[in-house]
Length: 388
Image (cartoon, rainbow, N blue to C red; front, side, top):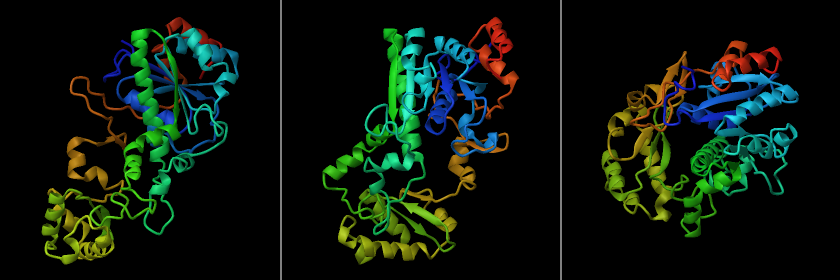
């Protein structure tokens, strides 16, 4: 039985060619592989120097798949990749528009070889538009959608939310979502298509509800003064006596009242009118003073399993030991490195425990190709030096 046929999860049997890139493409490939898809990563023979190089075991987005290393400027390598494309359900690439075409692996060529292929393209700006050929990063993509402007505290500059919103939410997740929608449609129609997953589009889509709040006048232009952006005293992070932090978010009035009771502040006059924005700055000072009276863990003991919408702010080293995270196995150890477990979870077709990122060795490349090509073809390409 091949590795491909033994994959577990709801996407077992789905085959994906990943043209190696950085950021959102690899994470989308990981999402699909985590849920059972057979993904082969077509990597460069020499490192690209892009992204943030790190030891392989810490490049978690490369887990659950093997790779081949090729020179896509070599005609033999391109033809071998086309043999993989011929048997694929989907392809992932994240180059600037036109690069894949120049390599001889553009969507027209690939769809001619495999008419049911779903060809996924993830970029920051998209395949067209005035910025389509301009370099950029997550921060730039979220900036032009309005999302970045809304994030931060009052009187301060916008606060970048790491690179999770543009690269991974607007990019990786929307690419994976688009590929799965395309594969589902192709199984009915027999026809593939191109998925243009632009991070600017994905971020704008994610901000749909927030933009509705803005249109309704419930989210003003002044960041840090609104309900969900640290303007409200009841949706905030507070420092504790030990310099650590807790989060509280009792938006609903019954949860808010319970928080005040737990804090012994149910009769404080400044806290009585929860939605009175004029009171929010002073109310925040009252809560801040109270939370500074105990340590984070003491507050967790008091509030952690109540309906006050509370959680301690944990760092990456602390998170695996939280009782809830531990009970659900949300974070798992793989070869001594903490990984997030695959998600979401499925009752009948659960995902397998992930494999750690694999070395790009000749043996692993041969094993990867055997999931796609007959043994004779694997050996033929090996003899021609098309991969290592």
